[in-house]
Image (cartoon, rainbow, N blue to C red; front, top):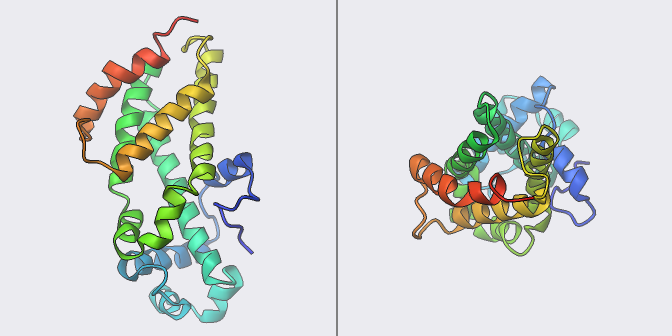
Length: 216
């Protein structure tokens, strides 16, 4: 059975590995997850049945249950794949940029944009807030820790390459970036501009000094 990515029994490292794993390689599983995502975006997970997913995917119920024994497993599978897509898209957006400064600026802007455009999460906030809000607020610790680990790992790599100050704590910087992005996504109304260029300008002025211009 698929583990709950927000379970207290799942370690931060295990969760980060799950979130950054490669894409689903089994075609029928991918087909099921595609169908489930469409159903969840339309009806919400609570109102979606396994029969709905079977009809949407064009596969039999037995095929669905062999790969996802419960609807909870299916919800977990969809959420994990969406998180993997987030990290993959973020990596792709900054991969060609030559400097840490450019990657941080573009990464911040792209992370905000991807989060704003995430249809499933935005839909759940409207139709089933009781499902998504606990894991975005009081139970968000494991997911925030995984995101922190993702960013901190890249900052440590930059330090080894001499592209980031050795005296900067990657975990602390990553924590600030993750919590700031998380807050801006949950409550976008405010003074900080969230469009791409506004986010880039904010990152250049306020975030870069914290990361790349700090003295060791």
